[in-house]
Length: 319
Image: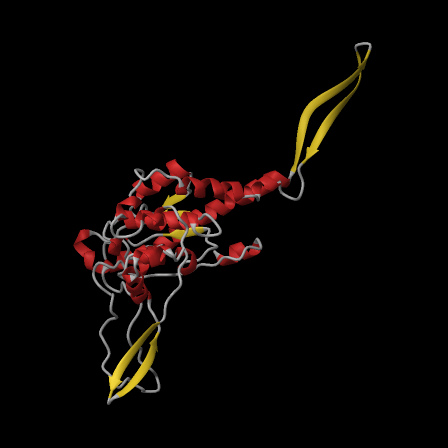
């Protein structure tokens, strides 16, 4: 999508901020600083590791709406009831992933696969040849043979960690990404059409008759031209943002799932924008009676553990 946005003078920035096997509650507590504060569209796709923990998912969505400089569209995965709730109660804009499978033909055999467009091959297979959709699902390998004859000294794994049977592979991810891109491009098309309609000349066919002693003298047709620039109402989003933020902050505790975190996390997280600072862990080893210090870069897994081990008072003071 980047070239399309560039033609309109818009810089498209996409960030892959994944937390494998960790859930999202730790990043939700500091989403402004961890995920970003200038987000227009945020994707939640952690169903495999979140384990249906609705309070944590609710917390993630609330912080996404209130903590940043912008109020993003929330694109979820498998939590439509929660997304619908936010749309109906706080006016949040939401969306849901589609898989794009509708209309894709199931592969019957190797010869039939060649008749299907490349991007749609081996995504759906008939039950009798299900193995065709399982082969070549992953495009990564530990070692690619070189022409100069150099080989690794250590033995290489047959496949990378994570290439397991329940992961769909690159084809499905590519299709899902294209479905999402189409949704964004459709929104862009609406915006461009509104821009065009808001700046092109418009005509008012109302006739004004000047009369003298009840006799019409002249008829004038008024021409109303909108022209450039586009009206300010299309650009100013402060009221739109504040409406959503205030509704989230003042949402009754009985609405949604977030306040069920009470007892494990401060309920203030459900209505207060949070900030976070990533800590650096200092570890010490005792080697031959010499104390050596080693600064270890904190991965998010360690950062999460540190945050959760803080006292509730210290955790809340991060705001």
